[in-house]
Length: 180
Image 1 (cartoon, rainbow, N blue to C red):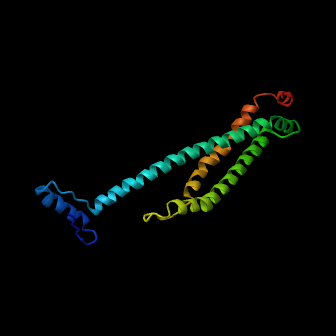
Image 2: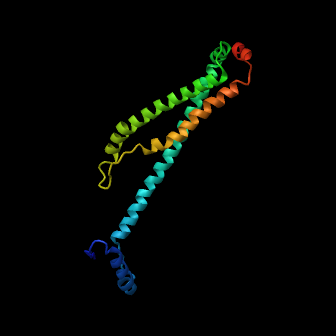
Image 3: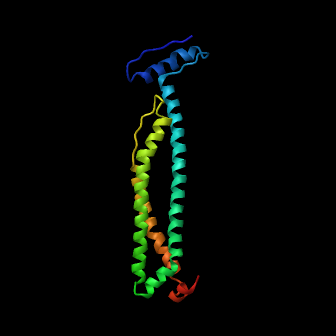
């Protein structure tokens, strides 16, 4: 047996309470599912997607940060001799450090532009093709997560080149030039 109750907007909770207190109290063999139950079930369903998506974002952010660290470290290490020669011809350690930080910011700017383009073009199309057919899906793309990551990435782009150069500068200029 199936019964439906048409209620005024906003009266869902009152009707649910009435059914729970009066009808279900007398007959516990009945199963009652209300719009509120369905909304709660749907909310749990959506929260799973938020949790999975957040987990994936954290993993991808970690991979991206580690990739940036490795790229910057490799750049400084592979150019050890070049940076030592620049120091020999008159560049100060401060100038070389500023140059490396500026390169880090250039990498960061390029990565940010590529990420925004991929989100706007690629993610939109993927989401439309996969979830776009679901009746409850509404597409709302935003670059807010990318913008929120900028301060963290700027800090990383500033600290890592300085750290790598300071680590490399512990050796003398002569050692850095003649070392293979």
